[in-house]
Length: 92
Image (cartoon, rainbow, N blue to C red):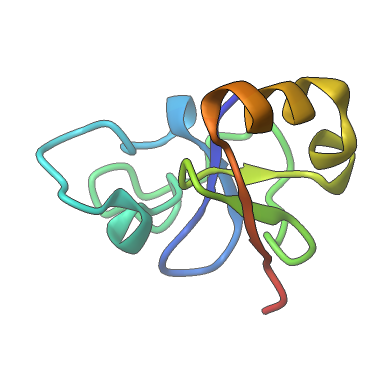
């Protein structure tokens, strides 16, 4: 489940429950908004509780991962074979 940080409110959002893939966006990480902040949608989808991205790990693919995900064997495999790298922890 690819998740990202909303560029407006800082919450965690899923690419499938938002307008993440809509339109032609050069750098989605700078403009991606959650369903509530996106004026084309305007309300939280309710598929999961809205929560802050604080404590999640931003990785080189532009998506967020939990600390448990980063410690997993699957993540280690992706690091070794696909070049995925943990960039930084979201602190704000």
